[in-house]
Image (cartoon, rainbow, N blue to C red; front, side):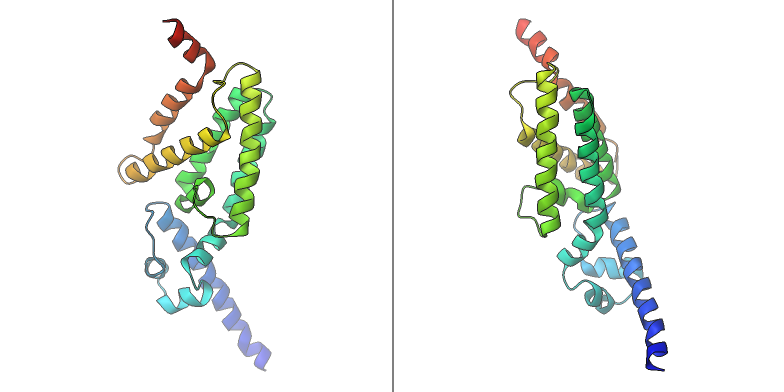
Length: 197
């Protein structure tokens, strides 16, 4: 009897959790400063329901980003597998930014601050190692400026995320123009042409 009476509660809890994660993903897709109260309002539940599932904002972000972090690592892994280093770098930046557009809370992967979970810390380390492989390959192939490293690429991603955040409401694709400018400036032949001129 008691087992049967708890089943609907578990189903309701699972439904509420899914609703909260969906609401949080929607909110982070359009803004950066999201509170647990905002998530409760968006999900149509009381704030107590949010706190029962996610006692802190970090707990919510951890749950929200776990699958997305795997996608971010996969993007870096696939880009590193490209035989053409420049194509790999371009793919990494374009796909990473596409993921940022879809999930605003993923800035935690490119952020330089203290990671809020071991999952994020591990993802950052893995991505940094893969990006260094991409950079080394492109430099060996003579397509990427020799004075760049994985840290520079991460800082460029941070700058692009800042552009995305600043223009998300009015022009969410605006970052593409800045990305094109950055890529143009990183190409080895462009640097050589500028020095000759």
